[in-house]
Length: 365
View (cartoon, rainbow, N blue to C red):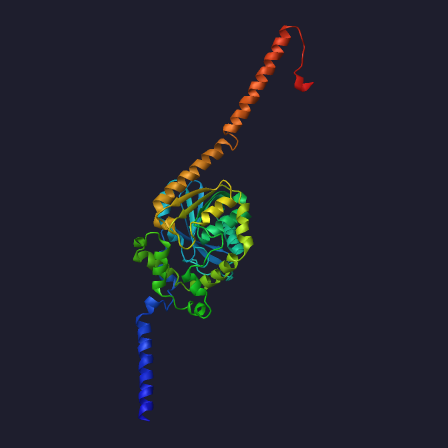
């Protein structure tokens, strides 16, 4: 009887200790949700706006004037990934960026559906709602996949396409995302998301891990604790896994017809730089910029350089388009040859006229 009481006492002590530890470390373990109002107070920007798309209040920022550039972030990220990049771009462009449904302050989609076609339809409706007829579409990672699929579906709405380490070809799913998909764990992941997972993941996606600050970690961690975001992430991963095993998904890349710039961090271990050769083979004429010391999110890691290179490419392409697609060396040779032929015909007709002959050019006989 005494042993039984001691045994029960030990179990009770263990339970009390476990509960106390859980309460004490609940913030680090992510055993909570952060109310939307708290997150809005911390992460809304002076330019923050909301617009209802398919019943979901979408958080977005719309800054500057000039050619429209729409920026799409990657998985588990938010529009804040473009902050410093926007500062460099906004003097030249109208920059529109949003928290894609499932992430950031936007939160989960009202219908809970996260498919390729769903994201493409979302972007179309978003642009229509803001009365944007066309623009330059920029996307990183998941946002890159949305961008190039949008360009396939609505090429008339895409003036230029910029893809930054985009998803497109079969890849090995990164372990933090794969972990959330593991049976059993996927249900726990909706309620328990330790901060250290975001810390480790960010140090993986940066080419230089020393650039990962506590502020960046906190932003990723806290915005993913928005009610509904963790469940949305699992739904999005379900869709991405299906696309990753669908050969038709990557085959469609070859159908891209809009001017495209491909940017890649050579230290990207989530979607390796080896994918660049596949893109170049599939899309003739695609231009590429590689960054030796950047990882999966160059726009966050080296925003100034990415903005400068992107601006130069956009401006160069715009100048070429303004001058007309045919005004190149080949066209000038063709025009010069034609002018020379007409001059010879005219001289022959003048000579024949002086000799009293009314001879028509041979090509109209």
